[in-house]
Length: 151
Image (tube, rainbow, N blue to C red; front, side, top):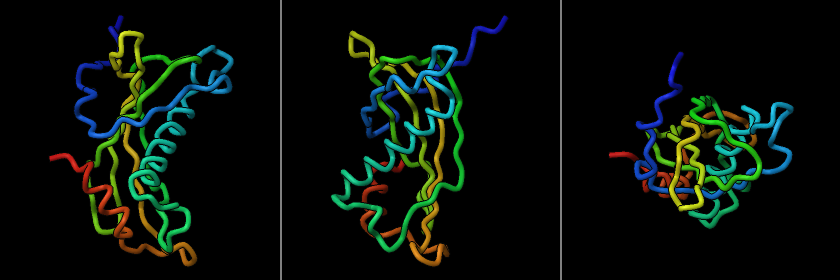
């Protein structure tokens, strides 16, 4: 019998930003745990909310928008409502037209410790809002993302 996924490689300090997310009643599925697709919602919420907060811009109004080209998630431990979470954000790769985020979801314990629950990646490709053709990352987004680039 397997001991389960290795959580030792997912370390909270490897993520320069932690964005708080609260599980919701509706996140639990019939099996009593947070449904797998909801983890992607946590990633999406954390990335976009952080971008808006760090740029001071409503990113939905920019002439170039980030569309999701790829996502992945490795589930490490079960989550259930109610739990307080932190989504760790870092940038794995910052290109001229795309950003690859490395993400992790951590459960906040009563002692304040962060326990890894999932690890994933999220790729934003920037496109013109109207034509949907690839364009350079907007300067405000680039400046914010540069702060999260892993050495």
